Image 1 (cartoon, one colour):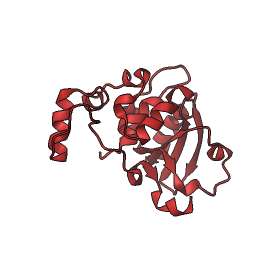
Image 2 (spheres, one colour):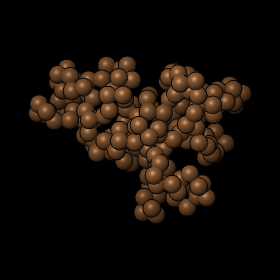
Image 3 (cartoon, rainbow, N blue to C red):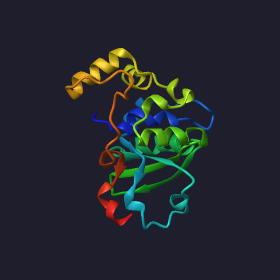
Image 4 (cartoon, helix red, strand yellow):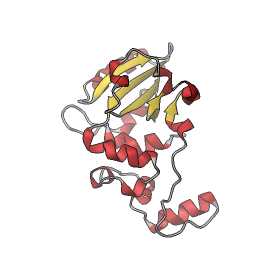
Length: 180
């Protein structure tokens, strides 16, 4: 799966059930989770009141639904998230669910957009279980070496190990940018 940076780094900001438990990403993958996004520019002229509220941030979850019955039962779990806002159909097989980012993680979203991964809050950093994301946010030497090989140049000590996220991959329907 070729996940974008929103999926890799920001899911822990919103994946919490109404009981306060972390929701496992594998459960999402099993029902057609494709990627998460920091915005959907296709909603620019929508009538959704929540979209117009500029004081809030959202994470958009795209699903490719192949088995409607299985998805419907899992969808009920998603709708019970304490920060679940809405969903909308994109076509017969694609559904977008929207979760509000809790206030304590708004700063993390802003740091993400600036490529300041190592400046994420400790609250968010401690939620990472993947060695790649941990290496990036904690600036581990092994991650610096790995990313230096990936970029084919030496990343200086003290620098962020990843570049600023490419918004064409982090925003759904980015091509609508000129209309925003």
